[in-house]
Length: 92
Image: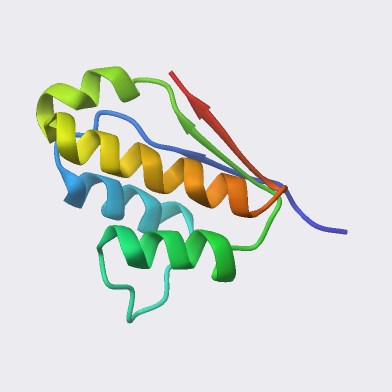
């Protein structure tokens, strides 16, 4: 029997917040690169599923991350979800 993992991102001010929050909730490997390519690889290959990633205040993070970085993070999360059927995104 597999356990469903729920991950919550909130109050994101910078990319370190993203990686720190994920690291507290998921078993990121010690060699995790703290970049979007490493995040995609982890979510599509290493993360056990099923997995739901909740980011209810994603729109608020755009101000802090900047439009380009925010869009890149969202694209990475969506691309990862497209790669596996047991990864659900809930973006607010």
